[in-house]
Amino acid sequence: MAKQKGIKPIAANRRARHDYFVEETYECGLALHGTEVKSIRQGHVNLKESYAHVKNGEIFAESMHISPYEQGNIFNTDPMRPKKLLMHKAEIRKLGQLVQRKGYTLIPLQLYLKDGRVKMELGVCVGKHLHDKRASAAERDAKLEAARAVREQRAE
Image (cartoon, rainbow, N blue to C red; front, side, top):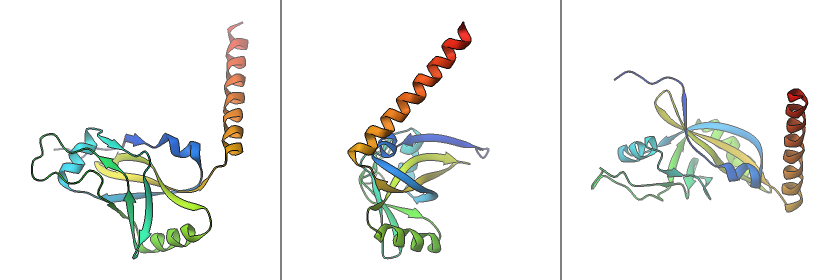
């Protein structure tokens, strides 16, 4: 079988960018079982409400739901089990220090296939307050209005 090239998006945590300011992003691999990979390739994964934490020098993604593979039998694993994220030790140490600062958390932003391997985009985030969410919505609406006005101007 030929090796796949490029990036194929699988799942995105769109809610994360609404609820958090994303300070930095990191790409990391995942330690998965075979049936989990097959299920991910079919798109049966949910990143909502998921988060990551550093524990004993390792990073784990919690609350990430990977549905059991339909053709799998005894090899299917618990859909909610913590998934180990694969990163360099220096990056893990840096993230551990960042998370200990007040208000920072690690949120999985996106899951994708890169050259046939499952990768995750992990964001170092700070929670938004209600007034920040309102300001973001107002800014988005202003951009849409400006784009709409430009389109109407070109149509005339």
